[in-house]
Amino acid sequence: MISRTDVENATIRIAGHVRSTPVVEVEPDLAGPAGALWLKLEYLQHTGSFKARGAFNRILAAAEVGELPAAGVVAASGGNAGLAVGYAARRLGVPAEVYVPTTAPEVKVAKLRRLGATVVRHGREYAEAYEAATKRTAETGALFCHAYDQPEICAGQGTVGRELLDQLGDLDTVLVAVGGGGLLAGVATALEGVTRAVAVEPESVPTLHAALAAGGPVDVEVSGVAADALGARRVGDIAYDVAVRTGVTSVLVDDTEIVEARRLLWDRYRIVVEHGTAAALAALTAGAYRPARGERVAVLLCGANTDPADLG
Image 1 (cartoon, rainbow, N blue to C red):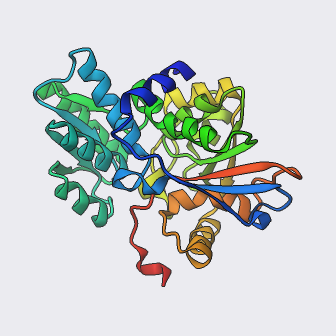
Image 2 (cartoon, one colour):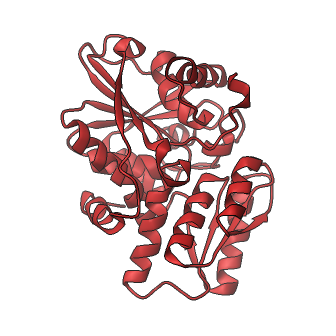
């Protein structure tokens, strides 16, 4: 479990290492009767996603207490978490080894190598890469950086929620795409008692939705257009606990709705994002989430490590 204090501490710790990303107000017609709609452009963060926040917080927190080993860090990732860990490790002068599934997009793997990380391909799903990475961690004594289910990772991701409140002040709802749930856990914690967080998930990978129905995290099948970014087999324990504590609700969108939302962002605003990121906007454009009249809504656009070739 994490608290708002953890997010506040992370905000101080990673200051100067991450970007403050902009917020733009757009036409509220995308949100029906909503009074105002903003896009939080977190895809402009270092390495193209929010995950740099959690990676820096995890590594810096370990260094603060003398628990950063000479062996460096190990991560398992479908792409974005690995990119973030590789970038943070390079900036902090730490060796990094990243395990990715064989299905990871080549654009992300190439970026990892450019960052100087050692890349190991293993298995077809994140869960298989994760198993290999944890085995490697035990062998080397390296610091393991979980993609989404460690307190320092979640608190670091939550700094984007804190930043959003500082930028907009009065805000009713933030829509957050969910895979493993690290971003949701952090954002919902940062917003707790002030603004509601709504989880948006692909129908083909409903990790939090299934967990809320079952009373705890459960495995789900992984498929669909957003699986490269939101392809965790189950939601993290921290994300589930935070969602229950803060009253997060989950809405589902299908692949067609995600593709349409991604194309809309390109056609209308010339914004290129991953399918997983577009899921958050799809909740509005497809009607999975219907704001009340006058509601002030922000959509967190969390990642842009994608091939834009299909947007022409």
